[in-house]
Image (tube, rainbow, N blue to C red; front, side, top):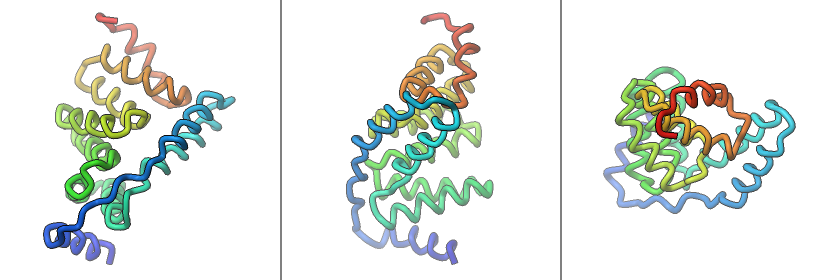
Length: 182
């Protein structure tokens, strides 16, 4: 049934002139969560805050956008990267100002090892939500995959400044050993 809803949603995208409302403004809540993450006493507490951040980022602007996001994430989890990409492309087309559509599309590109193609999506997500810790972390990992460790270290440091409990923090010493320009 969910696939039928997904197909009808995609078909409806072209058939209606509906526009996506603005993404919810969670800037105050995100500021509070960043402070909470910085003050977290341990990794477990920091990861709970990370989950709260994800809840903000994955709150889509409306029901239609939420269905596309949820469908894409479900398809990604079942390794249906083509179906996930279709959903995320529809989401970006429908809600071009919603950062998470770009972040999720970048993740699919990363999983497909399309690293160069992932970077513009990550930059688009960050242009819309500059304090998107997950997009910054994704950018760092993508840059690592491209062998651009100095840039990766900068992105990872920016993410860790907002949440020092990210599991990717273990990469920073390795990245900093190979930095030339920093």
